Length: 299
Image (cartoon, rainbow, N blue to C red; front, top):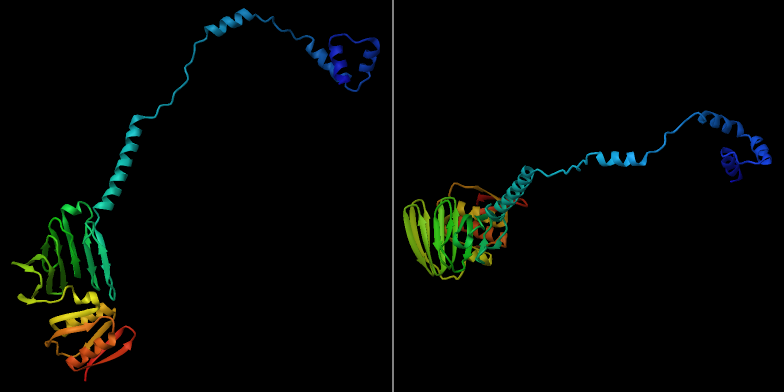
């Protein structure tokens, strides 16, 4: 601090003789002397404060730049958002809903109007949720039992025919070339090719090979709901196909006798009993070659 004080007084020529002698003896004096000699010839013009203010006032004001967001880009972004929402809406409501029951399974599902569908093994339905209450239509592959809530017309479409109801309980089965419909409550209208028939409670119809068979039923629901498989005048290949679906197995039949028709019931939860009934009926011997494969040979 003393050194800085002496430097300031030296620059103003205010040092006493003793202070000047002390300052000149310092190791930095020579450096300070060179700086003083160099700056001694520099001159600074007098500051004209009025002229400076006048120059400032004469300068043009430059407005700050405002970066605007292009309206076109805003519209593009809005369009993209609307499109994305539209696609999401379409996928959710217009894409068909699919419910399936795999081999060895049964699946129960509820439709948008609270109608209930029970799918038998190896079956599938497809329908659209959008506007369902005004357009109750679905596609069926396989077999299903329906408990339809009251409302507008309800249609079940299969590859073999169509069933139309308002509010009722019925079973539809479309396998290979055989089309079966059973009415358990209310009324159903069945369309098969050029034939149309109305069924009421306790009535059923079967179409196969251009033939129509009508029979009465006493049950209140399909037997397969209670784990029984019911057959009426069906050949052995149709029976084995159904057993394969119910038990998720493969059955090989080594016989040429497939013309005899079977009417009766098989359990869908006891494979050994089902095989015994088939073997006794057709004079066949069942052999398990693996966990999921059965071979029937002539006895």
